[in-house]
Image (cartoon, rainbow, N blue to C red):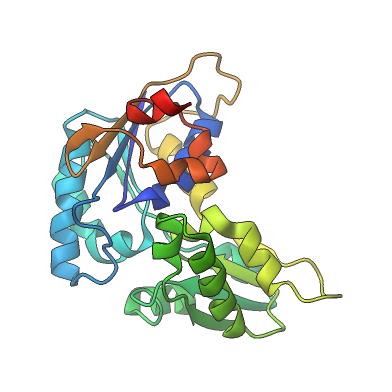
Length: 264
């Protein structure tokens, strides 16, 4: 079994780690786009063009399924990706976990990139799945970029700025960008109010990984003794994980090859 994941950068690590936990025996193809990163500021047309190129690089390795490990790419490029890859390769998008967060009730905050915040896509999800629930959209300026570069000071500043925009009575925060799942506990610490009930954080990685397995008729096998092979593509070129990947626990779950392995 071979599972491919795509994103402009290391935001796909959260879903990759979830896949690795469910099926450690799966071969993984990670297709990144360092030449075109970041995707967020690009026009929808340009982003779609970049996403299609990254998907085609992954498809050349004949995966059983392709996960779009990026909320913004899912918003703008998912129809084009499915038109290009399916039915031969099922394509799984990443949708903010608004539905499970709203099902619990309370006041829900959605942390997302400025490109996604207020978009018709996100507003439609709120209308469809959060009817009757108070929702606050929080644009997180610079947070995805700070996480991508493992810039601790920039991460702290961006998290603090977004926390200031988050109402004090929220009971759940939806992590509407895959990069944010890599710093989830820092977000919790910034938003959690003293004396309040524990804050719920809602990411998408686990659900996306499980859906990918369902689409290809596979089941979780977390105790599988074999370890799958990792292939990393950088704007179509075979390479190694970016050094910043090892800054996060999700990245350290993966085998290290290439120049990074020499430093271990």
